[in-house]
Amino acid sequence: MPEKFDCIVVGAGPAGTACAYELAKAGVNVLLLERGEYPGAKNVMGGVLYRKMMEDIIPEFYKEAPLERPIVEQRFMMMDKESAVTFSYKGLEWGREPYNNFTVLRAKFDQWFAEKAVEQGALLVCETVAVECIVENGRVVGVRTDRPDGDIYADVVVLADGVNSLLAKQLGFHREWRPDEVALATMEILKLDKSIIEDRFNLEPNQGCTIEIFGDATKGIVGTGFLYTNKDTLSIGVGTLLSGLIKHKIKPYELLEYVKNHPMIRPYIQGSEPVEYLAHLIPEGGYHSIPKVAGNGVLVVGDAAQLVNAIHREGSNMAMTSGRLAAETIIMAKEQNDFSESMLDQYRMKLMESFIGQDLKKYKDATHHFERFPQYFEQYIPMMNRAASQMFTVDGLSKWEKQKKIWRDLGSTKQKFKLARDMMKAWKVMK
Amino acid sequence: MMKAQTIEEKQYLVRFNADTKSHLHVLDDNICLTKCPDKICTIFCPAAVYKWEDIRMHVGYEGCHECGSCRIGCPHENIRWEYPRGGYGIVFRLG
Image (cartoon, rainbow over the protein chains, first blue to last red):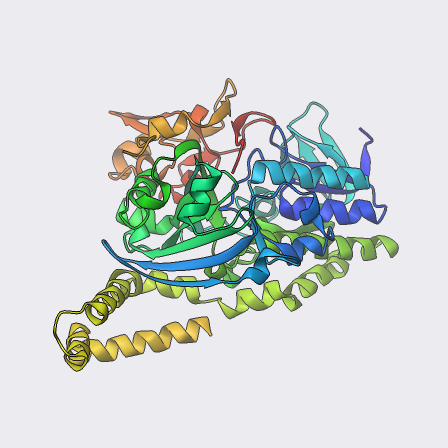
């Protein structure tokens, strides 16, 4: 291993690999470090990969990447104990080029993506932990790994070390995350025949469906459940803020069992065989939690920089775009041979001008709002279910009578005002 | 009846390449004993790594998913959390 590289990227997930790919393609001498046995060995995601941001890096990747199914339908269930109000959009335009998004299994996909970076000339070294950044005279000059004689030097280090973001924390770019800045997600991969999946989810071969589940999936805690179709498996999971699990003293795997056995969910997964169980944190602090992302000789990308839009379950796309923007900045810095913070800070500006900064800003108060005011999940979703049941149950009552009953179910005048105020507030944090 | 209901059954589905020494350390069992009636890590840990044994916290690091929840969620910052050595620890095969 040569002693010095132009750039060291720590972590071969979507952010780090995107960055290494772009750098190698531009002829930059880049080392991609991964602590797992292979890229993807430590990585977990519900499973939705967005076409646009991936194609910004590798055009027409979908012709060769290991993908599961292109998603043609996205459902949203507002679930109560024995009922659900469901919204859905299904569009066949998503089932053909240019596609919208795909389900993927990360262990397969991340390996493929990292191999593509290697083809471009990146050096991938697995089974190596970067334990700290080497800092000299106020600038990051390399990383210390857990290998013997494991100090490696570079002009610039990209921290793509994931949600725990230990290296940026060591540099003082952020404090330890709070339990309300991360969501703990557990999930299982369930094996099920292709044809059964297609029958149950109303799909043609090579079409996929995603279901996001709100309300009773998390027993009213802020969070969501999800159920995604892969080729011959399903991914089912549930994520809630860590602070919610602590407050309600809930075991995450018991919550996952609760979702799997919920009468609205169980028929989808009946007869399937669990083949893997996974747990991971998701950074959900949003805009307010984005740390310092550029310093002297160092950049922070992806989950490590809290780049997740929890409301729209987008993260891998932000990871890839942030990796690409970091690479652009490094290429510019290399041309001018200036890796100072003031130079690298252009990455932060690019990030904030892109959809990443814009979307995170748009929803900057959303997660906190729904955490502070549990009535949305605890009361309003069940209320919505009761209203739908009342309106669509034919029992001889006139529709006017039914509307009156629904109106009465909203509670006293005071409660109705509160409801109206809450709806306004929800609009304000989402608009 | 659904399969793999208990955490023990779920953990059997996962591949681990356990190191011989732990990457997780409870700094002071006495803090768990005297200051932490809930022992909340024994509840929120998704792999049930932490088990309270009368006066001390048993840490089954071999089954850790390396998520980081215990480090962030411990109300007394009483857990030292590192990554396992390169190549060791959990090995996800699919998701």
